[in-house]
Figure 1: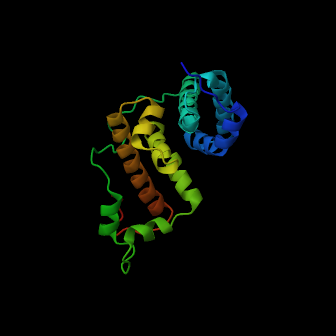
Figure 2: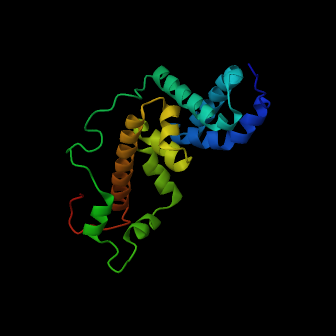
Figure 3: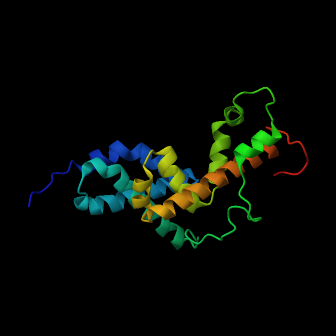
Length: 199
């Protein structure tokens, strides 16, 4: 049986540290907690480093360790990270559609690019605030696929869930993001609605 030679752990850690920290900030929504999570992740990774089979997959391996460490820390603090009520997306049971709402409300009457014009209203901090408000179990698939570019299959492996579960959570996360962006835009005066009631 051939043995594989791994580069030094510090080399792997250094190569992925910035992305790992960004991932942890998005998981925790707090830079200080993210630093603690990165530290815990690297400690666990260093202990398990001999088990890394393919150095080319180190990023996914580190993200899996970070996800598990985050779950453990959240449980230790008494936070529930897995149970999601069925009505968590929309208490009325109706799915919100940002694109349909923009088309109906028409906040940019002379625009040929309604959706892009809507997104241009937001600063980076606005989007981060909305992103941080998404239920964590739905936010994590978005972070992995949209922000870090993992495929759905890779994200499912990192989160240790079946692909169908990942796809469902990704869909619900996108819907929460859409709703959050619209609510943020209305409540901060970025757009005005045709009537007093929000969709």
